[in-house]
Length: 233
Length: 108
Image (tube, rainbow over all chains, first blue to last red; front, side):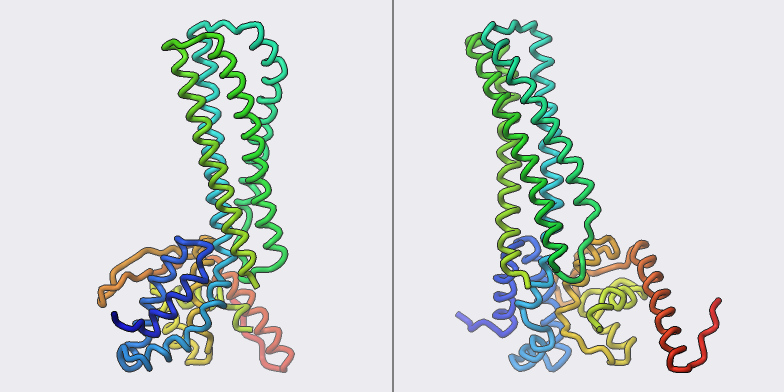
């Protein structure tokens, strides 16, 4: 096995330092590899000494990685915001489709369902509306952010606020979907197994899947952001 | 001081046409007569940040060496931002020139 060149070692360190954003890490790796190879070749060819001098001029990989944190965090929060909005739209469509199906099949509500719905439906509606309002505020807030040249305390607070908004939307959605699940389960339980039950079952399954993806995405963003915050100056 | 003006320097270097990171550094070196000595790596987070803020766009190309290369182009917003930076800089330079007793530049 050949010994790693100075450029290889440098790139590996840089990749490790950028582990808070794998997509960015891959992009930076390709760019920096090209830069260092070109810089070394411009000096005296790809000799280890030329590579070392190119690296020296390039700067410390830890400092370099830290300079990417601000842009990376905003990009991740924006992605989470977009996923949240798409998730909300998907869940709203599924909810409406189920209600339309009940109307189309003239599905009768049982007495127990009516009782639970009297309490559950308003909570469901308000939780979804709350998620929608927070998502809209979040979109405006995230959209208005710009990447600063320096990762400062004010920017760190802005990013944390964005993540809190994403988390609040996910939380409100969880409440709405939990109630939807309970109400749909009571309805299906009373109706027994039938072809008509397929649409509400499928729509609820899609809703739960969307919510799972959304929550996992928000959690992953918070985890990556935490790593980035720890690496920040 | 140089760090605070890095965005303007990068935008100015790219105002002549698209370039990759190494090309931007060469252009800065050429235009400044080698006056700016900054760690070359500093340019990449700046390019990335400017792209995220919509002032640059970029695409992958294949270099003669066969390696993948990211080429950056200044956008319309980037040109506008550069014009604003230039105007602010000119006012600042005029003011300092005035303080040093130099003759002020004629303004169009």
